[in-house]
Length: 239
Image 1 (cartoon, one colour):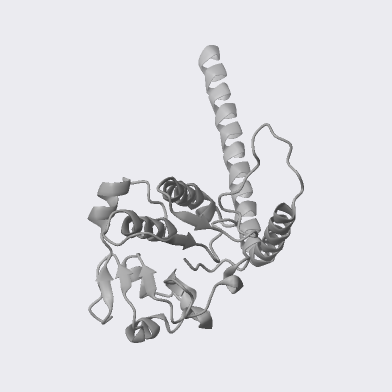
Image 2: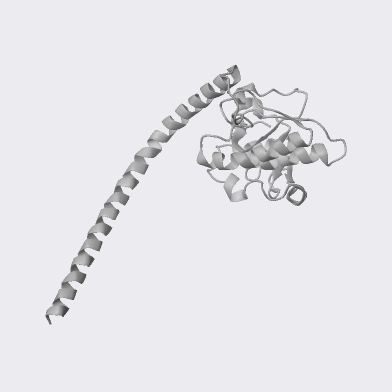
């Protein structure tokens, strides 16, 4: 499974690797990904046809030779196929929180339920970290990768990938090379996201300032209302 996280995407194998390569969405901007065996875009058509995707996306999909798994096959895309939602939900339940989760579920299903199954799942460019949206999706993906391991499927993640890693509770934690590499990779990704967010923060600060101004106005209004109420009470007592 090939994602777009910069920490490990450059480690992904090229065509001819001993296994299928699956990827998704805007990954077509990475030249080595363009000949992956399967493509996934599990979003509504108004999403992938809009400016949410990189320029040239639809043209790429029209010429893509492998299957494109979709919510509903787009008639403009010759190789578009229906993602098997019913079979996957019946088998795994409804805890499927991201495109990566749907991809993982299909891989596990084909390896364990369909005839001739078996295999491994390797992850490159799949971190599900950084943006809050990805952080919320991470648990669902790790749940499925745990399911895979429980079913006897080997799940391989690069050292710099944060998935399926964490301190062993109650035990001393050595500063291994794997931990240092992962920490350095995450620090670099954090720096990139922080720089990317700087410009957005400028607009957020303006919005925050306006909100604070509105809060002050509401506070003044509340004070005025209290003064008026007190004045009315005193006036009534005097009368």
